[in-house]
Length: 257
Image 1: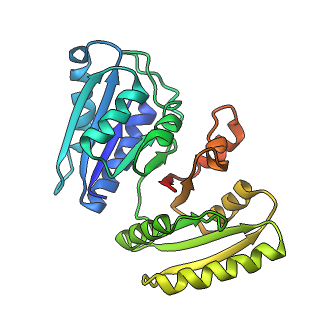
Image 2: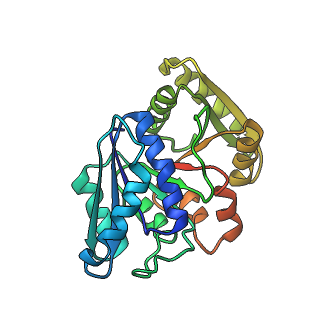
């Protein structure tokens, strides 16, 4: 991941998420591109955007950092910028309840839509996230339709952070535990990174079980793969406030299946 796009609504929550995104860019030695969308004339908010950009990047060293302001509607305009910038990763703060006083747009509710439309991974950064060295990552695996590319991408990122990667499957029955053993054997032969652990957790509730494991292992990032209309899409439905709060405990990296 060499090009990180950070859309921001300039809210306090979003700007704090920007500090996390900048730290990720520095760690990965990736270009950082701050992007703001306004329904007003872009020139009217550029000063504020530049202030936020300077705040986030004043101590950045060794990477290219840029910013841009466009007029338009958030989701469509951000989606176009993802393609134009050729982003490898989009980082977005969620639950941006503090609305931008300049234009009334906030990205907390847009993060899910961007996640669905983006052609690259999306990092959802919850409120109050402060970057520290990423030591543990959890990849939630669906053995019925998992993507080998997503597994490889997760392993690669773990290696970049020198982090331990837990590949986790939530089994709803004993037969599923046996099925996971076969997948584990296959993947273990293909993965060369030596800091990977396979875990199976029995439980009827996938999301709750994954969160329990994230808490138990004190994981820094949860990695999930999204498909069209899968559990993750429903999980991020903004009407499901309890599940939203559950996800906000750690940043969630959403890969494309």
